[in-house]
Each structure stands twice: as structure tokens, then as C-alpha cells.
Image (cartoon, rainbow, N blue to C red; front, side, top):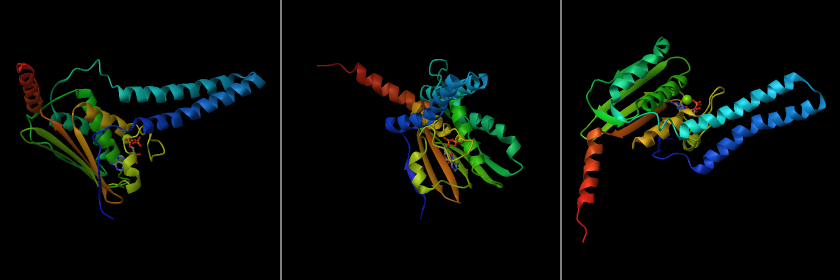
Length: 240
Ligand code: ADP
Ligand code: MG
């Protein structure tokens, strides 16, 4: 009964996504249908209002999904980003949790740049940290590790929370997969989508009652430039 490692370099399959949407949207639409039937029988305003609320729910679910699958692609430019700085700023949002959780940050390697969409990356870090805090019911510890080498930046977010059962590991990142009563199941979907868009790789290791570790690796700006230069050199090769 060891630690399971799953490689999550891709988004959940289309089939899984479709099943998730179908399941989530069916409930509010079924409710609307029921209330329309009631409306036909008795003409009461309250049923119209409930039907409207349920339609709003269905629309909200679809909007969530659209946002995650195509997140602000147009409005946000790629820019040079120091991910250590962004992690520091996002971690500040959890100040109110520090009375119960020790947050250990190792972010003291500044100056390594990644080409990225700042807000998307911050949202991804926020969701991973939020999950880590939510995984710790009372007291515990979360560490954020940041390191860089010549080509890659690596971020490790580790918690000693409840962990993830082996049989649930493959569901991570599937839209609407949540084990929380108030969860949306969209957090990791967004995280995986953002990592994927930045040519990154994300891995998760988890063991029940021990904790969970998410590891993300992003290519550095220099790495990308090198890759582009290689492509250009290839394009400039004369053809015979
Ligand atoms: P939500 O947080 O709304 O449930 P997420 O997509 O963020 O949705 O996470 C999906 C599920 O993955 C969670 O409900 C939880 O079961 C599991 N999970 C994610 N991160 C962790 C973690 N750090 N520790 C334990 N379980 C986790
Ligand atoms: Mg979450």
C-alpha cells in the first residue's frame, strides 16, 4: 500500500468531460421540467422563480466549464513572470488559515523567468493551495517549494492532509469530480488546463491519511527561446 504516482500532462478525456457535464446539467433541467408541469396545473409565481433559479444553475455550470476549457485566451498576454513572486503573493491570501496550518515557503531563488499568463497561473496556484488547506481538517502543515535549473522551474505543493484514495486518483482533473459537499470539482480542471497551456507537466502523489504532493514543472523563458531558435534554424535550412 504505497504511494501512487499519476502523470497528468493532459486534460481529462472528452468522454469523461461529456459525462460530467451531462450529469451536472441534467439535475437543474429536470427540476425546471417539473416546475413547468406544476405551473401548467396551478398558475403560481413561486414555481416560475424556482425554474429561473435552476436555469441559472445550469447556465452557471456551462459557463464554468467554458471558462476552464478556454480561459481568457484572448484577453491575457504572455509575459515574463517570476513564479516565485506570484506564489508569494497568492500564498498571502491564506493568512486567515495560519492559526491552524503551518505554511512553510521556500521561495528564495528569484530571477528565473517563465513565459506565462499571470492571472491564469495565479488562479492555478490558488486552487492547489485552497485544496491543500481544505485537505487539513484541523491542524497540519503545507510546504511550497520552488527551485530552478538551467531549463526548468519546479514547484512542489505538499500537504499532510487527508490524502486521496487510490481509486480516485484517475478522476482528478475531470470536470465536476469532487468529494466535498460544497465542491465544484472545477479547481483541478483549471489547474491542469493552465499547466498544459504553459507546456508544463503536473504530477500528483498521494496516500490516504498521509498527504498529497503536487509537482509542477514549467520550461523557462530561455528554454522556450532556444526551442524557437531551433525551429527557425530548421526553417532556414535550404531545400533541395
Ligand atoms: P473541489 O475542491 O471543488 O472539490 P477540485 O477540482 O479542486 O474540486 O478537486 C477535486 C477533488 O480532488 C477534491 O474534491 C478532493 O477529493 C481531491 N483533492 C484535490 N486536492 C487535494 C488535496 N490536496 N488533498 C486531498 N484531496 C484533494
Ligand atoms: Mg478545489
